[in-house]
Length: 508
Image 1 (spheres, one colour):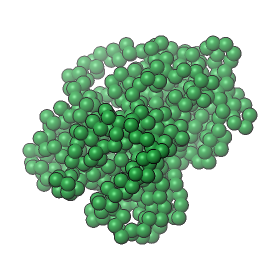
Image 2: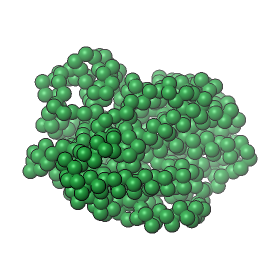
Image 3: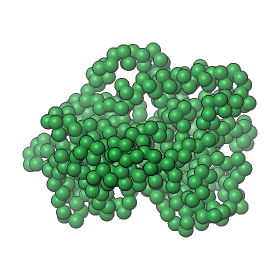
Image 4: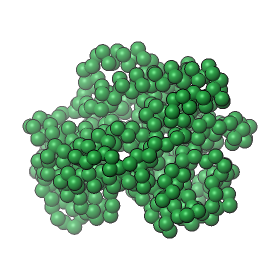
């Protein structure tokens, strides 16, 4: 089949890799000048600042995606990080007052770390916790994550797995399960904060989202050699080597369809007026944008219109010449003291977190080539409400940027340093990049916005259209988006075989 992939983001590129592996004729159409989509790159004054994801887990999924196109996964070197994170905990207004915990890659080293900061009992609990996380991951991925759903009843297609999931405690609150393993509140935060990646409060998320904790704590965290942008570049190279045609600076204006209700796709029309005729279209832009701009305003699925979207992020990228604060690692999580009220402010009140926990990534610690000699690349990220919140970003943008800068400086970053490159991104900027409600994290993963309840990657109203990316199944995060590419290719295979997926009407 002739397939057009609209958008060279991670999902689109992953789909292209799987599609060329299935011997389809693939053309990738990207509006920008390089691959990556939101996994972009700011290159200036000798700095290479990644504008998208900063944390990479699940190296095996990356390898599988490259291998699908016939590329040796070893051609993209993934550097394992140790520590995975350096976590600091505030106490009484002192950012370091309750100590520092390094999340170590080696299990024995992590046991020693926990013993030193929290005692041998907590270290033994860590072993039991990792066993639970591993069992949860092995149960969830094949049965509930790495598969296409058409109707909720599909959940019952593996009744044994569903029963085992319930028995594991996965439908209880994550915070409750974690607190049964660890009495130390620092460890409770350290092993549950990952729920925020799914747009959920760690205090309210179901334990099924412990699978995200598994992805970094057990499976490990990596950096592609050359920085995070090396990942989409490698995927693009693999797709091209497998036979795909990649066209950059080729924005798509609309998806063309046969006349009449339920008309199948026939091709795509570029902004230049050129028409590329194809049998199937895989669309990678944010899901609501596909319907709004590429399908002539066809209503998106109900959950995409009325669902709850994840919080957004204020991101300050900096290239600065000067020293790092003592002890700074590649990834640094600085937990605020005001834990529960901060999530209430973020997720319920729609206002800035009063005492935010922030992620500081300094990838030049691992990959010095990302900065000139004597310099470092920084990524400062604070969770903020999306555009459904109560912040007027047109007026409060500078205040929020200055507040973030003041906080990271209090933590010791940029002391004695000269800022040479900087870029600040707020929810209005994410919106201008095409991300619904101004969040790069799409729909949150509340139970009824996950699995068969999430917008499907096919729409019975548009035969031949397949969706890919964080807005559809399986969801948010680099590993999930790469899996969405495989699931999209599976849908194309169904279409090529004459099968017409028909997700339930409630998903429209």
